[in-house]
Length: 439
Image (cartoon, rainbow, N blue to C red; front, side):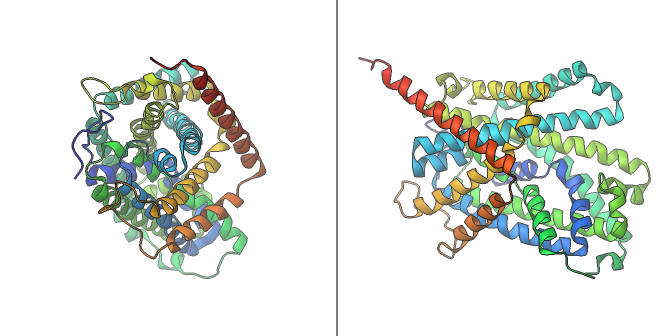
């Protein structure tokens, strides 16, 4: 059993329920409110099979995270896993890919989605000054909550998770009585090209769980909590997605194309009338806000862990003397989100997001295989993926397939970004080697 405090100065206070809540919150975002229409238009009733296929692909990656996460309990998630297996250079690349290419850009985009949702109700939020003020309030509030303690941050995420799930469960519960059975009949199979394109889109709807593992240094009894939390959270997500798809396909059928921008709002309108669309708009905003909150809680731990390893400036590794949280990292990370959200810089760099996360996934799966054959301190009693190397190899195949679907632009800018990261790392090491040694 892990002790309540760690050598990093943090506290282990996150249990299975809290950890599972962060996974659900970080995965279910605004995409669920438009995704069913995309799947239905492209694949029809066969879309349900697409969800099952993507769930199976992601489960193989999740299981690798469960194995390595139960062995390595330090803060940093994907970064610390790759760094432990392959050294500081690989760890630095994984850290930068994750916290910037996926975290900051994703949260900056999500922050704008919240403002756009509010602008749909209150046009004043189109004004840049008003939007900027909103960002300060949202990000400032989340930063304060997460500085005051990871326990408070997890509780806040739990409340948001319940709030974001309620409208989805309501649509599932009341929508089943409006389903037309003929809309769910499998009359034809989509082409391989169409299926492949849709599955790539679907896969990203399941991404987000890995962000929760960045707080691994604050999880109680990681050997038990991480596998159980991942599997519990994933089960709720998969079931929710599939049931939502069944309801949307069953209620709208061939008419889904007319509501491709807001299929859940159309279903809600069928159930409760015009007020349903407003409820779904508010739910979209809350769901997206939940994603940002989960990211502000989790991803600053990458900066904190990197600072402790000498990869980032030392102040980022400071722990609050009263609240035992990496407060400097939280403040800096929130500030970076604000800068990119206000400037719109995330729009030009959004091409990095998909490739960076896939490369992080690949690094973690390879790290899982590598550490399986190395004796480490956390091996005893840790979770191990059954079936030998079958599941990790399936995960690698899935990731390579998804990487092959990237556009040339995504590949080009990702390669440039990695090259820049490598140069920065080499310059940092050269600078550090010239520093005089303390006597």
